[in-house]
Amino acid sequence: MPTTPTGRPAAGPDPGGDGRDTDPPGSPGAPGPHRDAPAPARDGGTRRASGTVHSRGPGHRGAAARRAGTLLAAATATLLLVTAGCSDGDAGGGNGEQRDRDLGSQNLDWRPCPAPSEAEGGGTAPSPLPGGTPWECSFMEVPRDWAKPDGETIELALIRAKARDQADRIGSLIFNFGGPGGSGVSTLPAAAADFERLRARYDLVSFDPRGVGRSQPVECLDDQELDEYYAQDATPDDSAEEKAYSENLNRYDSACEENSGPDLPYVGTTNAARDMDLMRRVLGDDKLHYFGISYGTELGGVYAHLFPKNVGRAVFDAVVDPTSTAVEGSLGQARGFQLAFTNFAEDCVARGDACQLPGSTPEEIQQFVLDLQNRLEKNPIPGIGDRELTQTQATNGIAQALYSKEYWPLLEQGLDEADGGDGSLLLALSDAMNGRNREGQYSNLQAANAAINCVDFKERYSLDQAKARLPEFREASPIFGDYLGWGLMGCNHWPVPGQWETPDVSAPGAAPILVIGNTGDPATPYEGARAMVEALGKGVGVELTYEGEGHGAYNSGNKCVARAVDQYLLNGKVPASGTVCR
Image (cartoon, rainbow, N blue to C red; front, side, top):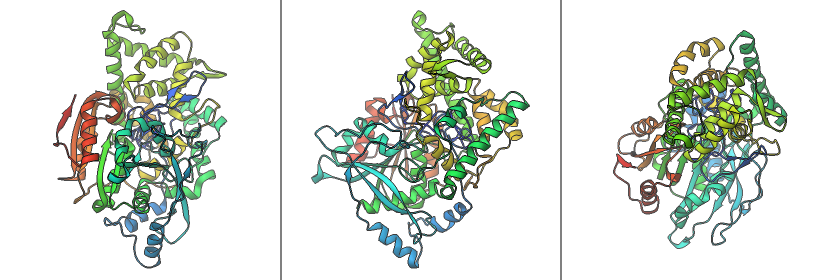
């Protein structure tokens, strides 16, 4: 659910914009990225909602080690940071430097986009935009190992829609919608209506980062095994359940190693940032113009640190706190989702008899949910087809619905129906978070989430260490605390080590970056925006506050936020730092 071991949630498109929002890699059922969450369908599939993939969803970096799917690191990863982390973007010398130049001059073969692959979530080919502008797709070659730029290459999948006004075109605007693990190739067309104003002067561009979708996707368990994995008890209560939980995490991680072992050391955020700078060059832009949401803000921060001179106009929305460790991120998510649930419950109570849930106070509604969770742990109820709704999936579904205020009616209805013995709606919400479609096929969102989180973050928690942290997680959130606390184990069995305690996003000399914090964001708590501004450094981060609900701000419908972002990206007008939109 809410997050992975590292605290980055996993998740599918998120309704507002994916802190690393997602489940802990090890946690079955964590909410997904990164982005607006896909709307659930009663038949067990999902309808894509326009919006961003929230990155590292309820587990944002939060589940503590797998940032919502977190997994992965490599012995070489540490070396990559040292040898590939030059702030000016140079790759080194000799043959490697020549190869880097050669890759920068590659020509992309843009063609009509096919339907999204199973790993990208499936569906149909994207329809033309208003006015008939088609979506075009291509592949870009990048070094598999940036420490060896003259070595083997892999291909990254890209998508674009050209600017309406080519004569006044600024360049490309590259999007990352979160996760980590979300497919930009499938999400950008789904969310395009939210960014149509920006297409006036930008080619809208997104991509599947390495390990994601069509870009050398990480593969772990098969679909049937994932159904079982996400139904498991992720909040063990005795030694037998603890043993089963640990074994399930080990089985998952072993499957990732067996199916994608050679790729696991290279899927981290540092490599993705270097890929983006190569993408900038291949697209013909002097500067990287960028829109990062949820985990995409962390990726953008790492990019700015590595290539401060190459930063153009950039916006960070639904901001990940770059100063928090995996466990701190998970605790932050626990508090964030608890706050969002309290706001939901207060809204329900305020509607009086129109509220379908029992209780005349938010505390009574919370107790109703806790009682439901306890019942489901012992006795799952019918869900969709022959699948039942378990406690873990119910918790995951609740978290998914808190990504956007628009989903509150679904949450209210789902809880009411589950109380009456029908778990189909909460299970559909959980499926949406985990990337399961109506045919029972899973995207590779959570697998990539785990791999990226575990390669990024060094923290590894044993069973005993996770248990010792449970009291503070329960205090942070009665509803989500146990789930996120146990999620700290997500990267414990991962086959490669992590790179950092926290990412370095300091970017002296970079152009202004507009950093937007939402006071009611459950997956990437508001405090992360201020931390990002301070970490970027004086004169770089420009803080804008949105007093609202949900994950992200730009696609919330708030005109003040939209105006500030549009003025900056389209006209270069930076708002005053400290601006508040209500």
